[in-house]
Image 1 (tube, one colour):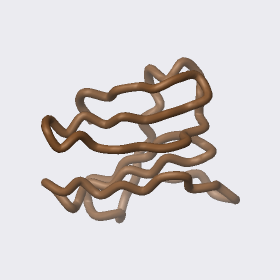
Image 2 (cartoon, one colour):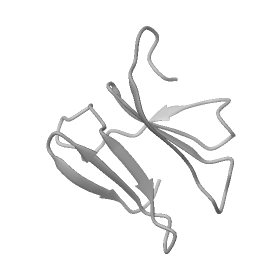
Image 3 (cartoon, one colour):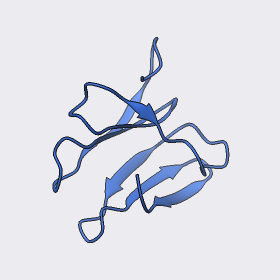
Image 4 (cartoon, helix red, strand yellow):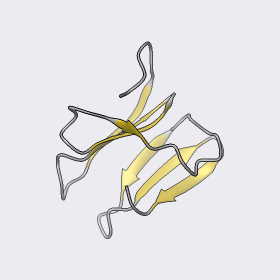
Length: 79
């Protein structure tokens, strides 16, 4: 679940090919829901310790997720 307390949401993306898949970039990491927002799990592996997500987007070509953090731009090939 998304952490309790105050979390700044910087990005909210809904996958155009699968509207049940939602991605939220926050001040406390990247969170993904595959059931329309009912449940969430964090996906912070491979971000080199950066939990602040500035922005996120989904590629229309292959559904890769691109995110920007203080440590750079990252591509998540598979959710």
